[in-house]
Structures are given as C-alpha cells and as structure tokens.
Image 1 (cartoon, rainbow, N blue to C red):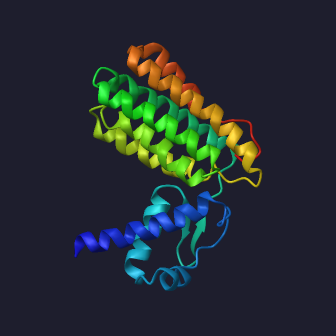
Image 2: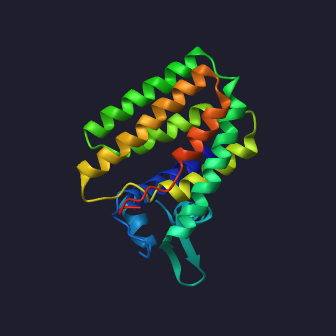
Image 3: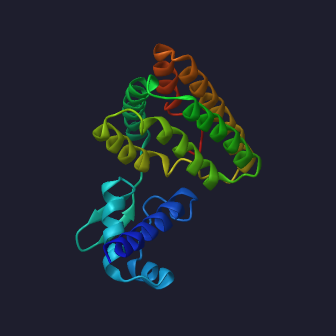
Amino acid sequence: MQLKYQSLKDHVYEYIAQRIQDGSLQPGSKINEAEICKRLDISRTPTREALFQLSSDNLLDYLPRRGFTVKAFDRKKKEDYSLLLGTLDALAASLACDRLEERDWRQLDRLVEAIEDDLDAHDFGGYYARQAEFHDCYQARCGNSLLVDSLHSLKNGFMRQSYASDDKERLASLLRQVNAEHRLIAQLFRERDKLRLEQAIKHHWRIIDFDMI
C-alpha cells in the first residue's frame, strides 16, 4: 500500500511539474486541487502530499487558507540558485571523477547524442529528462548522499521553469549550445581533468541572458 501511495504522489508531482515546465501553469497561477484530483482520478491525500513536496522543492508557494501558487523567480533569485548549483555540482563532479569507469563515460556520451535527437525533434520534455539523467549519472557516484539530495532539491526549483518559450527553434538553438557543454564535461571526465571539469560545470550553470529565463 505504501508503494502504491508513493506512486500516486509521484504521479501528481510529475503532472504539475510538467505543466510548470511547458508553460501551462504560469508564475503566480493558483493550483486547483479539486481539478487535479478529478483529472487524475486521485484522492486528496496523495495530491496534497505532492503539492507540499512541490512547495518544499521551490516550485510552488503555499499560504495557509489560500492554497498553492506557482512560484515566480526574479533574476536575483535565479542567479543565487545558479551559483549554488554550479558550486555544488562542481564539487560532486570532482568527487566522482576518479570513480567513473568506461561504462559511465559511454553513458554520458550516449545521453549527449540522445539530447541532440530531442532538440532536433523540439522535444523539450525529453531534453529536460535526459539532461537531468546526464548530471545524475556522475552525481550518483560522488559518494556523498547529502550533497546529491541538496542538488536534486535545488535543480527541481531552478530547472523546471527554464524551458518554456514560443520560439521553439530559438530555444533549440540555445539548448544545443548547452549540450555542447555537456559534451565537453563528458570529455573532461574521460581525461580526469578535475580543474577544467570544475570550471566547465560552474560555467554550465550560469544564468543565460535569454528572454525565456
């Protein structure tokens, strides 16, 4: 029963997070709990648990008696997030660098190519999932579970609101540049060049001056 409950909560979480990512739910939008329960045919308990988790992960704001709204990030907050992400991810990469093996390097290369396919198809949901998998691949090998948990929480709040744009070709062009950085990061892992790896990852998490962000 616990596993079933957890899967329902995760289903609601992903449903709402995806709508934030694709722009269906804009910053400041109020979350209609009853509508979500009806649409997903899910009871109120796992729905509420998912909403509180989304609030904890910085995707939603919660006000007692007023409910949940989509969190709006100003540029300063995004810059603060990017600094933290870059610093912590660079640390995770440095810790993982000597632990990665040939199979891990091949996985990173495979994901870079899969991301290119996603961008060619303007599949930005696929892009989001695979770029997250790319970073998870080495973060999981860093040997510090607290660091991994902190990164996941930060990325949920920061990344979910970064890929909505009406100009799909422009967005794909931007993200191809980001994927070129993924390719460089994979190469630096193979070379075990920790100094350049840390520099590349800190640069990777910068705020890009683009009107969708």
